[in-house]
Amino acid sequence: MAACEICGKRVMHGRRVTFSAERNPRLFKPNVQKVRVRLPDGSVKRMYVCTKCLKAGKVVKAARVPKE
Image 1 (spheres, rainbow, N blue to C red):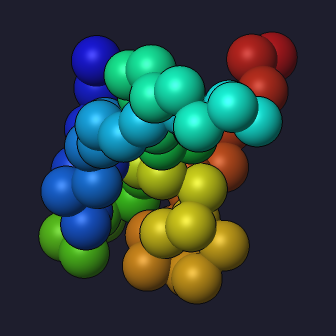
Image 2 (tube, rainbow, N blue to C red):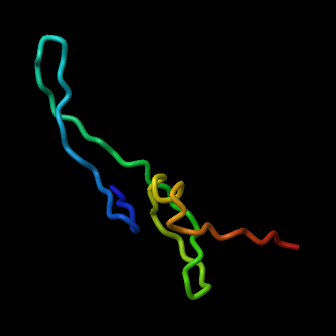
């Protein structure tokens, strides 16, 4: 499983509780996207970033340059 390279968010473990109070294991997976990010030095790198960091503006997505 991928983790967010900005905030370190990973898969969390928990339990699914049924109506009859039975408990079964489950996973909480973060919404991690592989995006092209522009780094502070101006270079571009592919990184795994969660959507919460993308929405908060913690990274700047790199614009694609179309081929001519």
